[in-house]
Length: 501
Image (cartoon, rainbow, N blue to C red; front, side, top):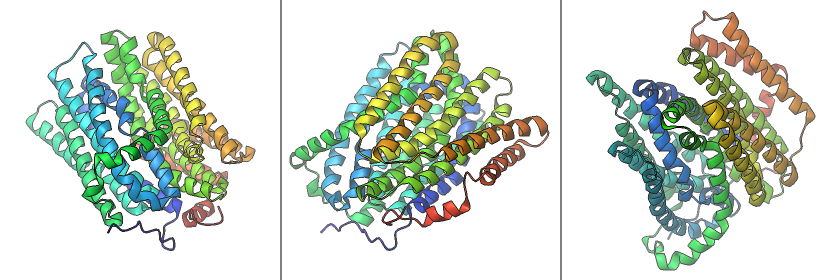
């Protein structure tokens, strides 16, 4: 007999301590991946080769919403409120995902063959990207089940397995390319990432099976699950639409650069944009990880009519401090990495500002999603999509990647303001003029720290500059009372089942 998920509340870790473990593991592993492997691959392969790689990756990523159709967000919220229904949802969702994977592969290759410039390398790269996205989609589905059931510690470990494997494998590929004095093979690099996603999926499903015993093979029958699949699609399509809209207005810039500019100019601008966007995308994973833990917690709180103001405020402020420190560090780094390309440095600096807004969207967007008002979020995302698309269509032919970066920043600010308003309306989030003023003062202090570190201490080693600037930003946040260790201590002890927030 399948066993029920263990919902013992006495030994559950707190919501933010779970998020803290998740982020701590990723803060150790992800910088090694970003700066040690992925950044080295960019430099080794060259801007033109990596730009083409990134463009094909975008072709695989844009339709990737079809692999999920909102299932993960729906499941995370639904299981947080109804953990006893886990057994009824698992098999239908697996079967639905298999259907969606086949449809997704077709769409990817239709997009590729719609392009004029096709070669075997492009086909190989897109094939590996698409298979990797399918593995990643199943991995995220398993993690959504773990998060919805509040099994956070194993989920935190699973979140870094793929990157640990990629660090090892990527290091070997870079060493082989250097030893043999050959160009770096991007197809091998894409296949390595796919293999790592596949191994991580196997580990994740093994862990889920240990905690829940979710399957008997007799449950995986198409005939008995058609009604459940239909029910799932009816309930998840609003989440799917939200994911699609956000993916398009967040990641569609590269496709628009390719479409709106002549081929030679498009390739050059995509190279510049990809170099900056890859850094933003890598750093943004912290916001994504925080949201994956907080969304089911918010859902459970709101279902029990628990207040959310304190916990949301603490999470938002600490994440803003992290985002600001990361942006300052990235700005200082780009002065070295892009010293010979002022234009690329400008694009990079603007996208790092967009990163700060994106991180906050994850927090307040998760809270708005947890209220169940997905229709309102879809209207907001539709407005952001139209705003982004129309401005990009107008300005990219004139200002190229710089226009795309500025519009990305404006779009994320628009989305953030909308999420704050929805959270206030539906989750009774209280806005504080004091906290808003502190946020502005804190960001002004971070800008000052960046300028002073760069201008007054140019002889210090780069990592010394980055460390000093980040410590200055963190110390400034403590000094003005924007964050405090007392708040952090409270948050780390707080549990979603607690009657107080």
